[in-house]
Image 1 (tube, one colour):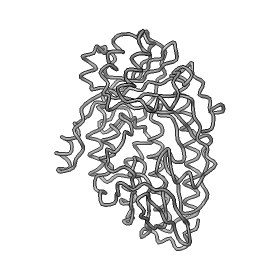
Image 2: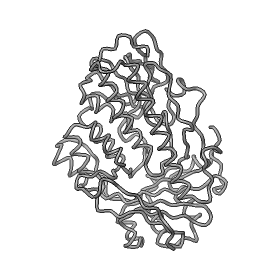
Image 3: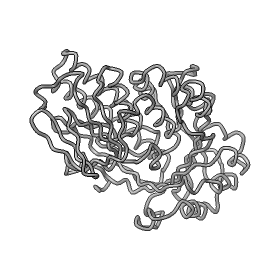
Image 4: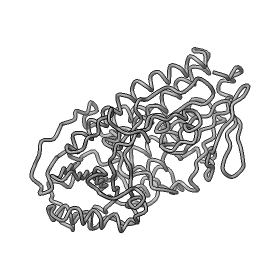
Length: 415
């Protein structure tokens, strides 16, 4: 690694990307005494674009958050997490006929402070709390240069920043990855999805059965269309949590809702990507309603009340295989290095695990316990192993939920 004069906690750390992984890393580094940490986010505001809705937090993800966040931020996250008294997973066909469903053991049990799901937008605002001075919005990284002792990041607005390390947390369409790993190993699963949000009260009025209102619902239709419906019930409404724990902090004023994900293979969808990704939220909602004409009316009623402004198209892709990046001052994190489908929320939890692991590695190097090159090599070695396992898990969930869709990693086409 070409950082011969690594100054430990005085290192200038540049983080490209202010998503969940990048912000968690920034919080962790600040906690560890690294004070020259700057996050460069391409969006103009924290709400600049859709980044998903309800997000499952795994035991590994929760452990990473607890290791990275200061106490006050952690209390805010616990307060705004999903109500822990939610049910498990149930599976049905399109007529609400029960189907076999796997069970998932959670070693955390049902403890009061458990964080097993969050609203993604609220999580991002929570992760910004206390480090607002370190985040630069409207900064889209376009390229970087490495040289003696560090790296220079260049941005679309013509500015640049110099640091000892550049962390590539800039997501699925990473400009850093395009330069560091130009060959690419991101593969298209051939699956397209429509993500949306429906206010909880509207879904109940539409007839969602009582037995399904507090659990993860998976519907696999005979024609290959799949619906995942997940409740987000805030333990404390974000605005009230902020008023109590962090007066003056803006966490928004979102209410309880259901996140829905409709997934189908391109061959079954029968619409080319150019047209699909140009559709408005209203058009996407109407498309799903058209394709689910024969479904049980209680299910159709839920999506009829989906919010058009919160309805988006998505392509499911995965990094196969996950590979370490070349040694140097540019270090990968999150989707930039291990993109995976959203099934199970595995990708976000893996990015959180990256953040905690990278923070620990940099801290060990700063303390002189491990040379920086060895610390970064160890981080990447561990990351490749657990990210590979995470992608396989994500694909297994996809195979179960979309039985008529072939999502074999060995048969996915390179994008």
